[in-house]
Image 1 (cartoon, rainbow, N blue to C red):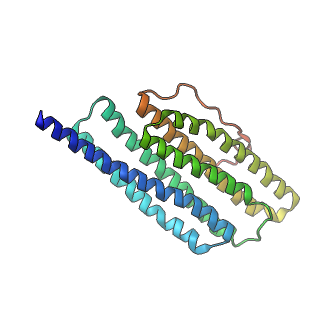
Image 2 (cartoon, rainbow, N blue to C red; image 1 turned 60 degrees about the vertical axis):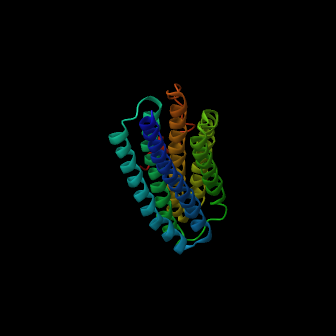
Image 3 (cartoon, rainbow, N blue to C red; image 1 turned 90 degrees about the vertical axis):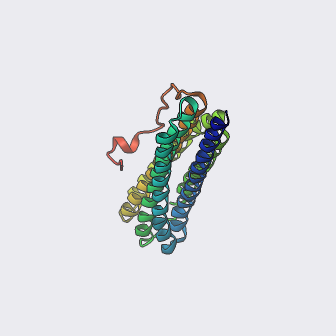
Length: 239
């Protein structure tokens, strides 16, 4: 009995360590999202560079999380609920790493756009959209820590708002481009930044779905429809 309790305690400690790394990773990703948009708004090249460089720390944490999770699988051989917990860690770290990549992409484009003439009124919608995704990510991480499937389901529903914001921005940028050909290049960059944020929302939704799986043992059955496919239909998708 004493040996079994020792094994359980060691397993719990291992999971706590990984969970702490996931939360640290999440905090860095939140900072990256905010930093990329702020750099664009304030034309802060130093901040854009900082966001790009910070992505290395996010990647390193993902690698560390995966190494530690793989070690747990090998040494502890968890079953049932404990196995779901470890598998969730792998998937959360992968989603966070992808969101970090999109933030880095935004920072790269911000560095280009800030060299061009600013288009009045072109950034407010982008800021609102990024803030929505930031809040969703914060709630998704809270849902993970608290094992709150209801909060996770709410986050999943809120991604529809992100899709709607993206659709509105897509049309707004088209309008700017039609009004003045000089707006075409900066608006194309802004559009791809908006698409980066929309993809971030998709990955936050994946995190929320993973929390639902962690709590219930099953994924949501209904496939959530994307709110708009305008840019896809026009060939303006970017991976």
